[in-house]
Length: 120
Image 1 (spheres, rainbow, N blue to C red):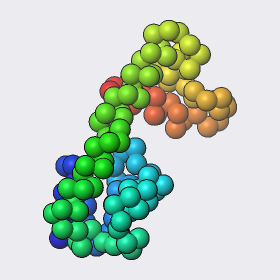
Image 2 (cartoon, one colour):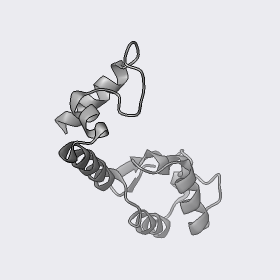
Image 3 (cartoon, rainbow, N blue to C red):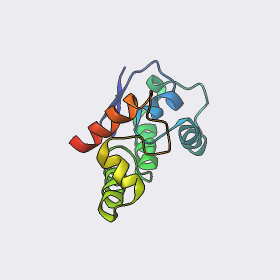
Image 4 (tube, rainbow, N blue to C red):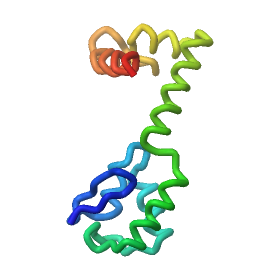
């Protein structure tokens, strides 16, 4: 059985705390906090959820900044850094590593990621 929570399809045999990490912006720690707050058994699976528990998870997730809202917030922060002309903003604009990494050999990943940010 597949459960749909806020537009995401979670497979029935996955653990709830693992399935919640599929949401952008939710890690293992926040997923564990949500499960503890709602009183779920740590090894509970998604197919064991009934409609009331799914609604409770949805209500709890609505309090977090996740998915598209978080992505927009990150892009707005990068745009602000570029606008004010900070060092990090210039590095984003050039497609180079932002956090002090070396560029002689290993900047390929940063260049790829910053190229994607320019498209969004």
